[in-house]
Amino acid sequence: MKKQFIENLVEKRGELYGDACRNFALEAEFINAILNHKQIKKIENYEIAIIMILHKISRILTGKYHKDNWVDIAGYANLGEKLQKKVK
Image (cartoon, rainbow, N blue to C red):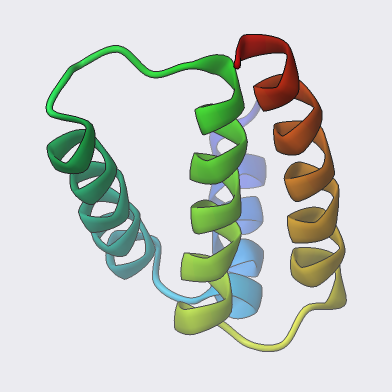
């Protein structure tokens, strides 16, 4: 991809979701909280759904309203529930 295209894409995403650095910092805090809570370094597949939900939450908190974030949260919650049933 051309550099200008990528820069434009990142800029547009920033308008929707807020500053990427702030978003990533908030996501890192969420993920670190999960890892500290579990006191292990291995993450189960259903926990990726949790991380994706936290990703969407951080976008909601650092950006503007975007309906897809809320729809995606519902989808990840559904998938996570199905995956956890298989593990437990």
